[in-house]
Image (cartoon, one colour):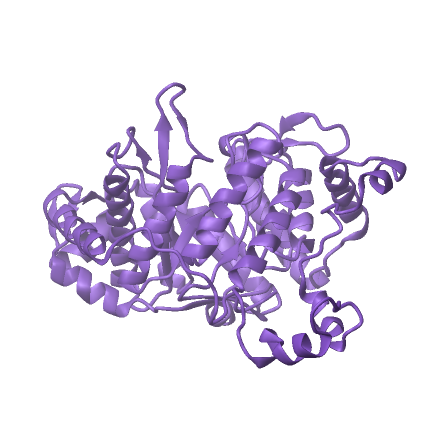
Length: 482
């Protein structure tokens, strides 16, 4: 897993002018100071009040000075680790790292292809596939397990993901109490709470309700993570025309206000706690009222909020690789490619939702493999073009001369293997393809999923760790029965 993903020659994308960045910033300040954000949580209100914010009932208005002081406390870089404590990703600058979505209600069962309710098996299978794929650098538990009691399903999500996956993990919970138990489980794996804080392999998302509301339970989870000193991802999800203004700039303002308000609370609770903000910025399709999960506006707004996060010197959380298509088909490939390329060019740091279909409702293992392939191609583009004496190859061209060829030249031998190749991409002549069985891309992807599930098994956790995790799960189940 690469710690760094960019190079000095990487092409970069901007969708905002410097004047646009400043106008968005000024509007964010006015919104925080005059409209405010709802925090229906006594401890949060007390923290804000002591810091000089205006608290009227549940509504908190944050002055510019408090925001500036808060941003000065935020680490500009966040490093996430593997389950074993090895550095995996650096979130800063234009570094982009792609991962999955969590908590879908349905999945396509790989043996039959049928759409079914999520299960513990779905969580484990998707974790194993993500652990194997080289361009998927982190993941979430990918389904809501319907085969365990709902109040503890979030704990089983974490358990089944972390036991089948070594890469950094984002796992959500329903309550603050469950959040504390997941932190406890993560600390068991890491070797203690301080070891987990020093080398975090686990993070969570804090989802505000647009426009400008944090529920009491969400604030409780935020405070648990902040107290533990663990990275917190702020994930506003405004929909232009529904829960945000219909304009793209207005929707960016909504997401920034919600993310920065949560970020401020986290720093008031524990100054210096690592935070990342961004979100899922989409449009509402007025024909269907469905979120435009693969629309070009999503890619544009995610590029814009990435630029704004860079302006605030806060690592950015992005959205890409997702689709409104119900299957990993041509529509899904088109929409995923557009958003993945835009996110990489914009330099969004931690990008989620790759491989997601059906507007976030359904998990497809084939869609993960397809998105992994797209990310590999995009990585090839974002390396840029190196220009030096070896790359310009003047002496090689001079030796070959007009009318010659470069096939036998040592320079070709040194460099041709860097050209993009993949066993999933077919570049054979038609006759060879036809005689070998005329497999489609869909056929090759299905075969790769089958191979991964049959052959890839991540290194298991130590037996003593597994027993302690089981004890925490049993304690939670016993609480339900009491």
